[in-house]
Image (tube, rainbow, N blue to C red; front, side, top):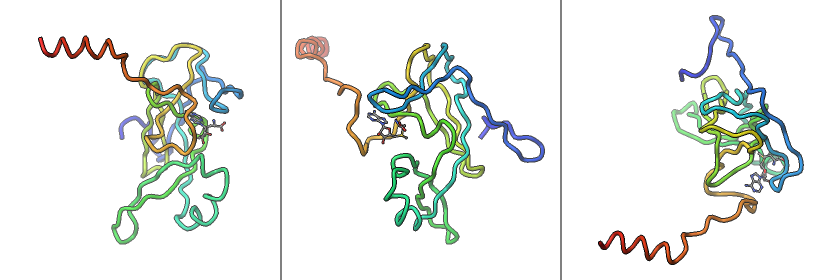
Length: 164
Ligand SMILES: C[S@@+](CC[C@H](N)C(=O)[O-])C[C@H]1O[C@@H](n2cnc3c(N)ncnc32)[C@H](O)[C@@H]1O
């Protein structure tokens, strides 16, 4: 994975975009916002992760608030079987809220080095919230308005264009 700056001794350079703040009173709870324009592809944060044991997650972590903060973490066990663990993400990684359509941050796991890197997916204007996608199975009610299908008249116009 070429985006990590690995030193000769194997250490990993950490980077965090400085132009960020946490707002505490949004409809999604706390969230990360841009204080200045952030260009596409900017590294937002490089976050270390703690991978949880399958048993400790099931028996303990799932019973706590941390359950709402863990990420899927694929791994291969000692028998070569692919499995899915959960991981706690340190740094800003645990503060990004979900957006179904307007996500502006993408993330990449480095399963060898136990790191996730977050990058701006597009230009992010000052004042905008930085959101990732949690996928399609949300465990909470999405605070964003649902995406409505185009109005009937627009559909008719589109159909006419296709017929012609
Ligand atoms: C990883 S935390 C994100 C930070 C969290 N907002 C906080 O205040 O600590 C995930 C939680 O944020 C909230 N959240 C994230 N995206 C949301 C959304 N689109 N709509 C409503 N709540 C959201 C949910 O409560 C979810 O369980």
